[in-house]
Length: 278
Image (cartoon, rainbow, N blue to C red; front, top):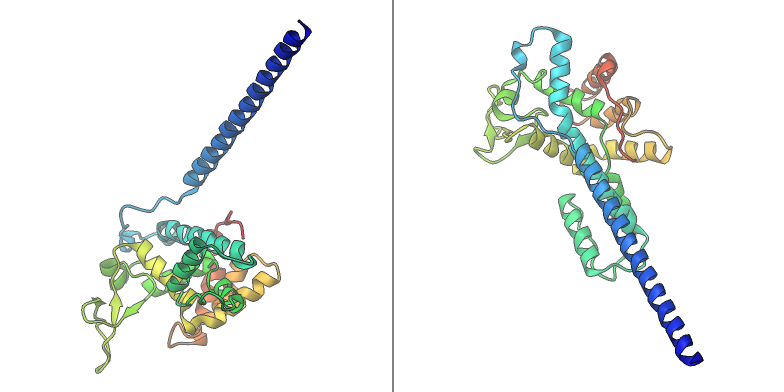
C-alpha cells in the first residue's frame, strides 16, 4: 500500500514538474515572441516615409519655406541610408573579432565587401586590414553635410538636373545616354549628369560615392578620427569638420569647402538630432 501511495505521489509530482516546466517554456516563448514583435513594430514605426511626389521648389517664393520644404523632401532618404549603414556596421563589428566564420557569415561579408569595392580575403588569409578599412568606409554621414551639399549642387532643387533627372548631388556618369548632357560641356568631354528614378536613389548613390571613392579618403580619415575621439559623427559640428574631406568634390577646391561650411552654419536652425545608435 505504501509503495502504491509513494508511486502515486511521485507520479503526481513528476506531472506537476513537467507541467510547470512546459508552462515556463511556453511562457518564455510567448514573451520572446512578443518582444520580437514589439521590436519589429518599433523598427517599422521608425522607418522613414519616402516622399511620393516632388515639390516644385521654384514656385516657393518664401525662402525659409523653400528651405524647409527642400530639407524635408530629402531628409527621409538620408535617414534611410544611415539606417542601412547602421545595420551593415553592426554586422562588421559583431564579426570582427570572431576566431572563425561560418560559410553564411563569410558570404555576408563578401557581399558587403563587393558593395564597397573591397574584396573579402580568401579563407586562411588575415582579415584584420579588411575590417579596419571597412569600418572606415561603412559609416554615417551627418544630415547637415548631405542636405547642404544637395542644396548647393541643385540650387535648392531648382536646377535642370534636379528637376529632370532627380540628381541633387551633381553625380556624373560616363556611358552615352546614362544621363543628361550638360549644356556647357567642354569639347572633347564625354561625361553626362546621371539620371535617377527619384531623390532616394540619388541620395544612395551619393552615400556610396563618398564612402568608397578614393577621392574622399580624407573625409573617411577625419570621420574615423572623430569617432575615436568619441564625437557625435552626426552632429552639425562634425559636418563642418567632415566638409574638409570634400576638397576634390568640386573643381573649386577649398572655396567649395568654405561655401559648404558657411551654408551649414547659416542654416543651423534646420538641422535635426539623430537617434541612431553610433
